[in-house]
Amino acid sequence: MKVSLVSVNAKYVHTGLAGRYLLQRGSEFSEHMVDHQEYSINQPIDVVVSELLRNPSEAYGFSCYIWNMSFIDLICKRLKQIDSNLILFLGGPEVSFEEESVLENAPYIDFIVRGEGETVFSLLLEHRFSSNEFHLIPSLTYRCGNEILRSTMGPPTEMESLAFGYSDDDLTSPGKIFYYESSRGCPYRCAFCLSAQDGNRVRVRPLNQVFSHMDRFLEKNVKQVKFIDRTFNADPERALALISYLKEHHNGITNFHFECSPDRLTDEFISELQTLPEGMIQLEIGIQTTNKETSQAIHRAREIDRYRQVIGELRTEENIHLHVDLIAGLPFEDFASFRVSFNDVFSLRAHVIQLGFLKLLKGSELRLRNSEYGLVCAEDVPYEVLWTPWLPYRDVQRLKWIEDLVDKYHNSQGFSLSLIFACEQYASPFDFFEEFSRFWVANEYHLRQHRKRDLYQRLSEFADGWQLSTAEREEWMERLVFDSLYALGEPFRKDHSATKGKKNQKNELADRFLAEEKHLEKSERKKRYPDFSIGSFTKIGSLIQENGDDSLSLVFLRKRTPLLVQPSEVYQYTEEEYDVQFNRLVIRF
Image: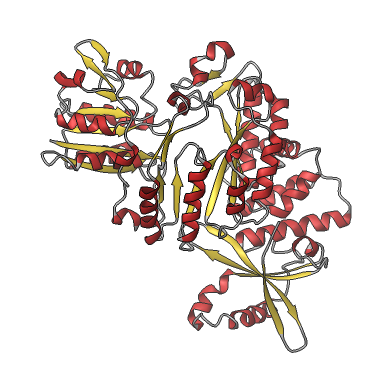
């Protein structure tokens, strides 16, 4: 029997881990042929269906999440129209709850696997997907005539039995993000999250197995490994052991992403994190709200002072990229309350603020108890909040516009000096973003696509309305020009005095700088030539260097990697009578 496992990812760079787990189980059955195919929601439906049927299988299984459910539903409907004999089955968090309604609304789906699917898939292969024997297999919801039946829930998968998931060919795919699971379950019971259904149980892989898997990622120099553990530091000692191992074997290339709870970041753990090489790890810390009543309702009662202490310590060495999460639309949180939560989180100085909107996930406590709260969310995926008794639709939309600008101007890391100045012109950072969003929408910029360079011009236009002195206006514009050079490698205003100069003088200066790049062949230097920009500043030097001098002359050298354009390398130069000295600056904002 031939069975295809299908992963439909949100982006090409993502990898489907669940399908790879099941593929490993399928390889244990010589009488069956099991393959794994990956697509993204950005591909045309017709192309995906055509590829799935190019070498047809008898059964197709799909991993379902809120981001791909609609896409998968269309694929399955199309497949069944083409061949009614195909067996179609679904699994994953989006169909593991309220699954009877899924089958009622989609008669072309044959059955659903609830919860963890590794053992269930093995049993399906053993019973050759026979509907006459579905009652013998745990964790299934299936059709029996006109009835929809549910078998009893099976035991959880033994963690050590999970496959690594990736082949050597996978690991050499350029630009891919690789997901890894070292634990399942969560010690917390957040009301908006499905992990609360696990009853606060956390199951882990043996550390030696994890170390072995990390070795494979490191040997192949993959760019990023994203741990999908709900709380990576649920066991602080275990997390510390893994961090220490990664530090000892760091290859200077691979970045590891973890979701952490600040409550379980011990002093010893923080001290170890402060010693890690720059860029080795990034941490995501879910705060969600600082409203005490809201925190209690979602079982998230934590203190902002603890967040401030922990994140402040983590930022001391500037070696870790920090993400923090906020959720709008939670019970008891109105617009004014969210303003406080936002300002609290902004004050933590994390590199990224992920401002999301509540989604009433199937199986979550908030969805099950929503009659108490009256939260109104869209009925279609991803079930995102429309309005609440505390937050009318108009305010939800206002926060959507603010979220867009937070992502463009804060999370992009391209406005480090200018954003600080902009926020200081208002009572709080939230007030700046709120006023900026009003300007943005009034000019219908929310309806357009924007190049990165355009964003500096839009902020400059907005700032025209500020009451600034001549000196403040000059400093503001220098900050914007510097940020554009640092983030883009070129100024957003070519007529500004900081970058305005004679071309032959700039070329001569660039030639001198390139001449010091001894490791580059002359032809390579010329290829790098367009990546240079030169700026001379008179107002902001004290913000960047420690000697207090406001004057600053800089060379900006852009760096490119396969995944992204990183901030420019910055060199300070001083011109003497017969020489020019170039010294690299380490920028700390």
